[in-house]
Image (tube, rainbow, N blue to C red; front, side, top):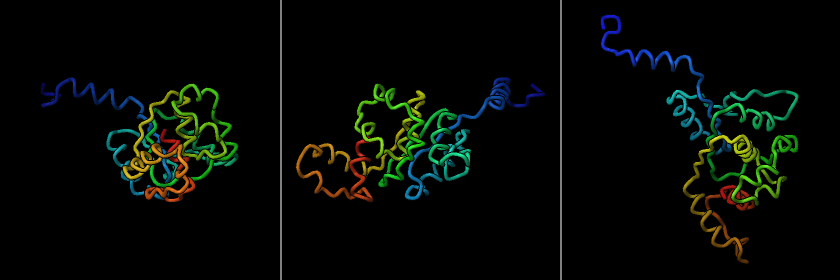
Length: 187
């Protein structure tokens, strides 16, 4: 009791176990420009939990100069323990052909409830590829969707088979031509 003071042996054991365990690596996937404030807050939150956030905009991704940055991001996902996805008003950059080759699309068709996104590979964003790589590796994916986007998604779902779908303006989506791709990705 004198050596440990007011702490019990259990507290000392917990500290020793925690200090010898590797940190959980959490890949944070989203568009960067529009969600930079949210991403920085999430980074602090994840660090506060004792985990290591992996984010492309914070130099956490090892970029191999011989390959495209999209490919480096997709490759880094498989070195993580979980992925947090944030879906906002932007679609993001279309993935390169090189990065698309990192995904086993045939295997993912069996894992997905909706394969519309997988049918149009040339329309997939790098953010979507990161998530697909996590799914391919049976990694937990926690998804957070902007409330406005979620409400517009419901409107899209109600009208996607109608003639008026191309005339609807979705206020939450920055570029209307990307709305379909964002909403199908949510599905």
